[in-house]
Image 1 (tube, chains in turn yellow, cyan):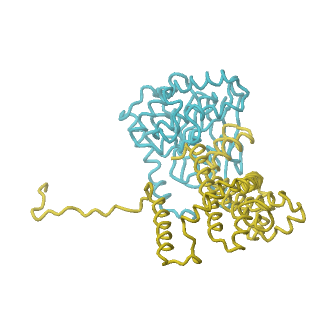
Image 2: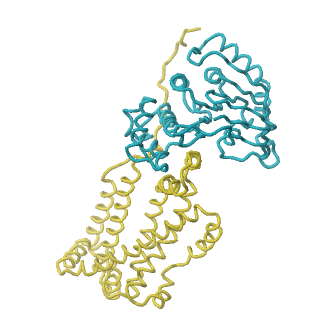
Image 3: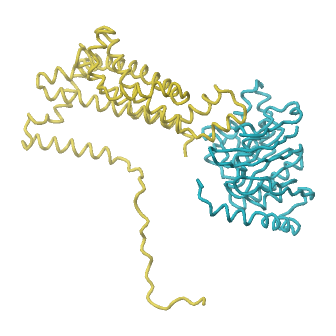
Amino acid sequence: MGELTQGTAREVTFRGGGFRPGTRRGVGLAVFVVLILLAEWGTRSGFISALTLPRPSDVLLTFQELYQSGMLFKHLAPSLTRLFVGALIGASMGIGIGVLIGLFSLVRAGLVPLVAAIFPIPKIALLPLFVIWFGIDEASKYALIAFGTFTPTVVATYAAVDNVDRVLIRMGQSFGLSWWSIVSKIVVPGAMPGILSGLRISLTIAIILLVAAEMLGAEYGIGAYILQAGSLYDLERLFAGVVILSLLGVAVSAVVAAVERRVLSWRV
Amino acid sequence: MDLKLSSVSHYYGDTQVLRDISLDIPSGQIVCIVGPSGCGKSTLLRMLGGLERPSEGKVLQLGDAPAGCLNPLTYIFQDFALLPWRTVHGNVALVLEDHGLSRKERDAIIADVLARTKLTDFADALPKQLSGGMKQRVAIARALAVNPAVMLMDEPLSALDSQTRELLMDDLVALWTRQPFTAVYVTHNLAEAVRLGHKIVVLSRRPGKLREVVELDMPLAERHHGDPALEAQQQHLWGLMRDEAAAADAELIDG
């Protein structure tokens, strides 16, 4: 008792590593840079023919021309307006109705099947209908984008409301808080994380629908620009348009991330 | 203001969880309810505060709540139930916001209860920055803020480690000694019951029946950890509960 065994001493093997995602700064950027450099090298050396892929430096030049001619903002301004107005209408209606579904059994029973029915409809297929309803102008594009952002936001919101800690709601009731106080001070803030991660998805869908709507009928807009380039097989311009969309996606994601950092700083 | 349970029974579906419970909760006393797990003690507490309706019998409130009482029946929960997005100050403010108090009145109440629970320096901290014991002190401060007639405590110390539990028990005793409050304290920890209870109610296993009511006369401030008289009481209670607890443990959850 108390004596240690005599014999060879070996260190205990460490086996607890991994499975812990951490932040690696710059790696994402490096992947982009490597892919672009590969494309540049491939097109310059002739390994990739000019018909397969435009040379990245040419795309950059096209982009520069677009900027200098002032056409960039002529296309970007209407696109951003459509995105903003459409997504704002869709997301706010989605959050509102999602909260109502989460709170009232009757609304849930009535609307959840309806949402399930309209969720899988490719919204772009309804554009002709929207053109008849709202006219060929901006209103039909707003409607399309709003409709497309609405459904995923509704689903994310009512799921988030369902996930609000019931203990907190019980607490609110036990202190005699009014119904409105419980909803505005407990339910909605508690559902915020889920609502914001839903918003990430629905805003991306909004960008896709924006382009689709602009391709079907718009004089200016990123979608129209890409469509023009595509029909002329002008790959440089096509890619310049695609790059704008990618940047738009990154920007939207960054905005949501910034909002999350601000609104959800209380999270562990 | 006193509370009275008059032959309360309760069913979940076909399962009877409480059978014919009659109990008086006189003001100024702490009534501890102990019993094996699943004996319906938490259900009983929810009924006392109006969060659940008994299937049979009545929960009665005798007399009116004293003036200045914003929420006569106030809970303290096992898992604290603090809003993670509000600071300590904000969490206490939450329960005062619906009472039409001016900002100055609210801040005065909050400053007072935070001082009483020794949290003044942490008013701007978020719950995620606090230890378990501090979180529960915030919950106690929040309960004190509405000046309750009866505090309903559902295993308030069960989520804490034993050192923190001792410290918080001392805090509760100090709060009570300064200003006696009425409380119903549900716990499965007999040491807590003999330290804090003026009256200890032992429930049998499901369906919960009143097994015995033990009255302790020793003043709260004189009860200390390891006191032989309290140890003896605790042994007596454990004797009552031991077989029930063993039988309850061997039951299937849905049995």
